[in-house]
Amino acid sequence: MTLTPFRWRTLRKKREESEPRYRCNTVTCCIASIYSNSAIIAVSDKRITFSGMVSTEGEMTKALTTSKWIGMIAGENISAAVPMLNEVDSKDDGTLTVEQFSVVCREAYRHQQTMGIESTILSKYDMTLKQFKESGSRVFTDKVYEHLIEGMEEYDLGAQFLFAGFDPRCAPHIFTLTHPGKVQFFDRTGYWAVGSGKHAAISHLAGYPYRRHATFAECIYQTIAAKFAAESATDVGRDTDVSVRFRDLSPTLDLPEDLVEYVRGLYERIERVPGEAIRAIDAEMRRFDLSKEKYKDKPHNLGMSFPKMLTPREAEVVVKAHNKMLNSGEKKKTRPSKPRTSAGQP
Image (tube, rainbow, N blue to C red; front, side, top):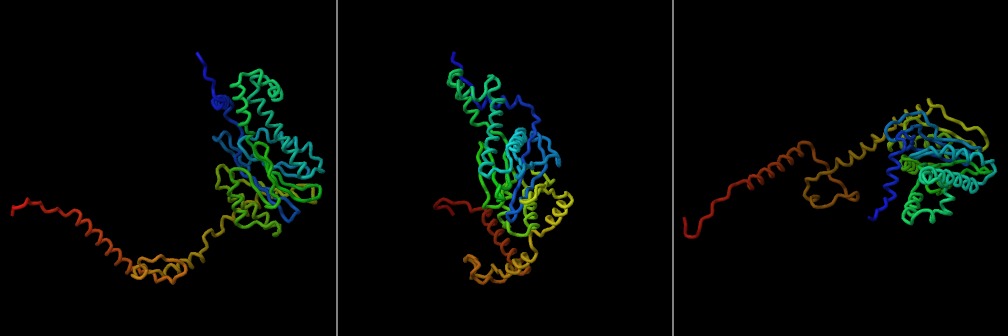
């Protein structure tokens, strides 16, 4: 009898089912922006979600600082994030260019990825990734070897990183580090975000639009407001952590929570639908009069002069006439037909 080997997806599903259910997850939003080449603004939430079942606010700081950089974490599994950032911090002596610093971050990411593959995929075979590369094709059958390779290719560390800081020339930089070790720079944009609230935050900053050479207070407000806008996304917490890293000062400034809540109150009182705009539109729409024959079959566009809108009494007359027409049509449909008579009969 020939045994059909399991597909790797089945093996991976069984492995995930055997793992502890209460992993610490953070599906969140982290935002970084540049102010006038002299400061970095970092904003994130503080929510932790455990396996999508339980969540808590105000217990997680997503921003971890090195000598000149702020690193922020977002993702489904941050168990490897803190060791990775600690490894980056140990290798950052403050003299690395942004290219060299990004390489250090990528190497630390791959190191944690290698450890994850060895602990979740190769641990049952008591092999390291290096040993698997050297002798895996000889130790395993072709199909098992292919399944293991497929699992390694699909393995995701489960965390995204957003780095913002200054190089030795005091130039500000923002870049992201995502699966499978991909680095993207956003210096020209002047802002970026990661996490489940990424798109809402970036849309807010782009729509304002965010200008790095605006006032310092305005840049901070717009970055905080982008986080408020991102709270419409799944699992983005309400509590907000705001940090500012200056180019010429070593300490990082953390904004007090009561100030952030005060800004939130002002943000929530902003008139989303301006009353003046509604009144202007309403005044223009009241010029319509769809009962006039000359506009019956013509499209209404902004280039033509709009007729006056129906008054309530005129609208009532039109509705009654329309209902009368519908009722007469229904009577015609329900009227019994006369019986047919054959030829020659009276």
